[in-house]
Structure formats: structure tokens, C-alpha cells
Length: 216
Image (cartoon, rainbow, N blue to C red; front, side, top):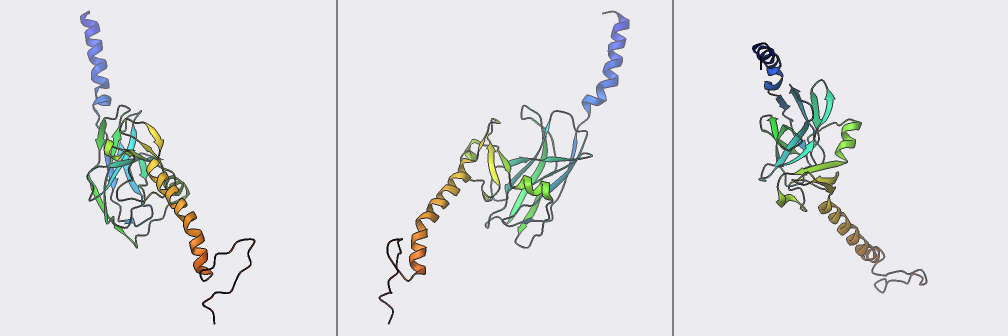
């Protein structure tokens, strides 16, 4: 290569180097609290965000070892928000951070680790879009031990699908099985509940009600 072309190439590389060397900066805003059995929200601001990446909110019950994640939603101007699932009754604290992840799953940058308490009287207002997102959550898994299991420290309400560690999307089988079990249990308990309400007498369409033998 001629000296002239070498100089031209060096100039191009020098001019574009800052674009490739820029490291994204993520600042997550600590949530004052998360409500018990309802959705909280986490906000973050990104600077120097490259294209083709996803913004994830990683979270876990603070007594658990492994993280889950949900995708965050862009609000414009480098601002993002994300809603983790609803904390269950035993959950008294959530640890979380925000990360930029490329299509191969590599973490390019992440915020500081944050911690917020879970409180019964925590008041969080979600707008219509945020509430809609919270009611249709896709939860990402980071270990294979999480596959097919409940999201530890959180309730099923609002969780509709999962992403396994290989990036494969599927329906949430753990929560769906729980709902089916409760429906079956409710169907079995219905006649029992009716008999209690009628003083131990089970009614059929062809049989009129009879007086209870315990009546005077």
C-alpha cells in the first residue's frame, strides 16, 4: 500500500475511533420501594447507547441467588422503564440493575446494583402503557435451574411467557399449571361449599329441598 493510502487510512481510523471506543453509561434510579403483590417500576437513563442492543432490567428476591430479567421500554431521550413481576408475601426486598446486552447475549454495560424494600403500603402509580406491560410480562431466565419453575419471590399474576438461557421464547408453564390446578380445585370445592351453605343438604334439579334434620 502506498504511503498516501496509509496516511488516508490512518486518518479515517483516527476520526472514527471515538465512535467505537465510547463506552455506554447506564444510570438506574433507585425505587423508593416495591409494593407487595403489585407491580413497581424502575427507571434508567442511557448515554452512548449503540444500535442493535436490548436494555434489560435484571432482578431477584434479595434472598435468592440467581437473577431473572425483563426487557425495558424506551421512553425517548435515552430514558427507559421496566416493571418486574409482583413480589409475593415472603419477599421483603428486591435487588436489581440495568444492563445493555448485544444479540449474542454479551453484557456491554450495566448500572450499579440497587436494592429497594418491598412494603405493603408502597404506593406506585403506573400509567396505562406501564400497567398493560405489567399484565403481560415475559420473564427471562439466566440459569437452567429456573426453567419450568416459579419465579422465586414473585407471584404468577401478569407473567405470561418466559425466555430460557438460550434465548428461546415459550409460554410460562409453571404459572399456567398453577392456574389450572386452582381452577380444578375450585371446581371440586364448589359442591362442598354449596352443601355447607344449605346446612349439609346437596340439591339436585329433580329433587326439591328437604328440611334439615337438625331443625326443631
